[in-house]
Image 1: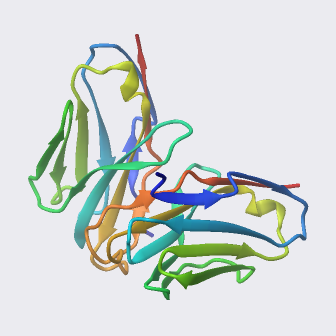
Image 2: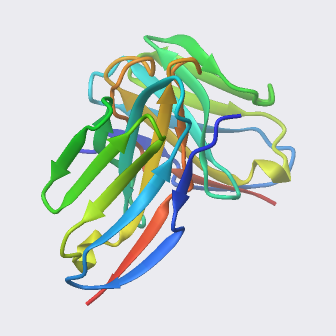
Length: 115
Length: 113
């Protein structure tokens, strides 16, 4: 039973394409996140949703659009993919918001390669 | 810009050795400090969430201490085993950064049998 699952695990695509990464958590958590692992291996937050409401929206190009149909799902859609979007993207969830001390539960990551 | 730094970046020890590494974070507006363990091909998993200055947490052979006044946390592993090989991440949450977790780059530990 995977607590936080994201698909696909690997995504190879051409520049200019539009792609989506899906994330689902079965922990009953209220808050979900998207993190990007940058070229220096740092995990950096992109978005946070609490009960389907956008809470954190970092300085991310508006080609990236998160969508939360319900609190168990947070999908990431990326338009007009660029070479610099190549990275590993992690979904995570926590019981309550990031303004608490709740630990994060991470998905296994999606490695995106833009050619 | 808030910086969270971990040292060393990587560490190789023999099985049975005890080891420790450091996480440095801003000493002002502290809210919480998280430690995560990240094994290759798996997801990061939470080890500890620490909130009080002087806090010490323990989980099996792994323990952590926290000094919020000087802005550092140590993670200790006693009697390292090959299964301890992983990247250990710390993450800082300040009270004035809208609750975001700022991650360090991690310390990658290799334990040789």
